[in-house]
Image (cartoon, rainbow, N blue to C red):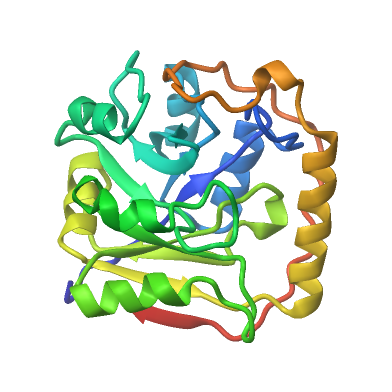
Length: 264
């Protein structure tokens, strides 16, 4: 790690292609925001849909961003981040996920202990061998932080902790991320995560920010997407064409607070 510039990374992001949530920004909007925030690596992880194409990869590369294929898969009604997933595989349960995995694939436990139906909770430890890292999510305040169990598990067991924003609205992007000591390629990045060469950079949200995000998220869920596009018990990885880039996209103001580094 000494003398090496770390990569600025977020591996849990959603866009307008998401079949579950009604999100306004496109994949290209997100990539341009990543450029503005000086990110090196991102992964778009829409629900049960792989938003990735050679054109989108090339666009990101031209902007100086490495785009890693990713998906937030619904497995036994729980969310699991699968990065660089095998194509055309069906994950009907954790056993089928185990059989589909390969060394070039990385699996992260997203927001594992948050109070939601899709959080892993007890399923994380039951299937611990499947996971390469556990997530520290941006959605917390100094007084309300459901990440603490994940942080405690990471520190007690030397298990890799990775910071992600789980962005659904562009102003969330950059509130929590990871610094990864690796070369800018998938193999090196995944190896660094598994070897715990990661620092989480994060700041708590203010109560006002947290309330605003919660209200926006609730409105988004109430509007929703068509019922037929909602979660499936056996998601098959499928490709999505990137949505057209919006012109003159508005970037909401982000309040800056105290940052903290959580060493891996």
